[in-house]
Length: 240
Ligand code: CAA
Image (cartoon, rainbow, N blue to C red; front, side, top):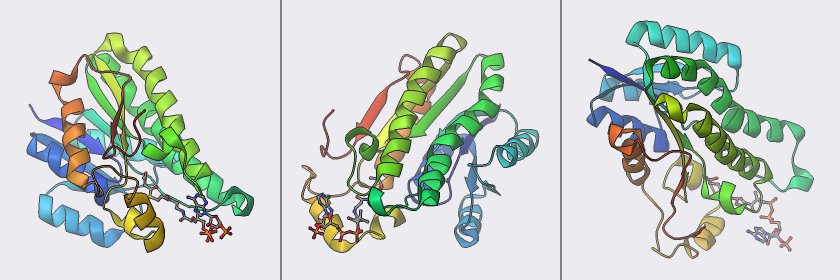
């Protein structure tokens, strides 16, 4: 029987590598995206997978999309909440909308997607949820009060939901990537990035595939005893 995996923000960056990894593991992958049509089309062409456009921060849009995805493909067995944005800036200069945009896209999206998908997982007594948090949710980061708060919020959300669904065969885990080579980090000022790389004991940034491999393991039936965990993959930059 086909198994469906849904990856938010799954057409680019870390999400793209996760989509490819889950596809290699035999899942029918559906990726979501919000803005970048060109990347979405490239993803469809190279993988043959579906890419669905909606705003994960908007509950009504999520509801419509999840209904459409489940009737076209089948029930979602693996959900990866990966979609995220940054709007960096020091708090005393941060416009109110940059706070709300980051909290809603990175954290409220987890509520939206889980609220819609968890009931089916509970009924079927099986499910895997992997939330992509960040090293900066664990340690904080200068210029990221919004992002660090959202990513730390995902860790509490993960633990609370893991407790609620554990007896129903559903696991919920969080991964905290460190600095990974994607558009999000290449858009940073070079001198800021260089100073961060100097703090990474393995002396380099991570690759998206190094996060995808971890997601694939947590999404597999073999990871049934791992739930509510926060797994770091940061080259040793922060050892919690
Ligand atoms: N620690 C201490 N002081 C710092 C600092 C730091 N990390 N970064 C900057 N400062 C200081 C500067 O030296 C400067 O001090 P002076 O005025 O005394 O010279 C002051 O703070 C202001 O700095 P800027 O001139 O750089 O201020 P800005 O408003 O132009 O930019 C910023 C601020 C946007 C936050 C910028 O510092 C920045 O981009 N920081 C990096 C944020 C970051 O790491 N983002 C991660 C993106 S990737 C990601 O999020 C993925 C993931 O999950 C890991």
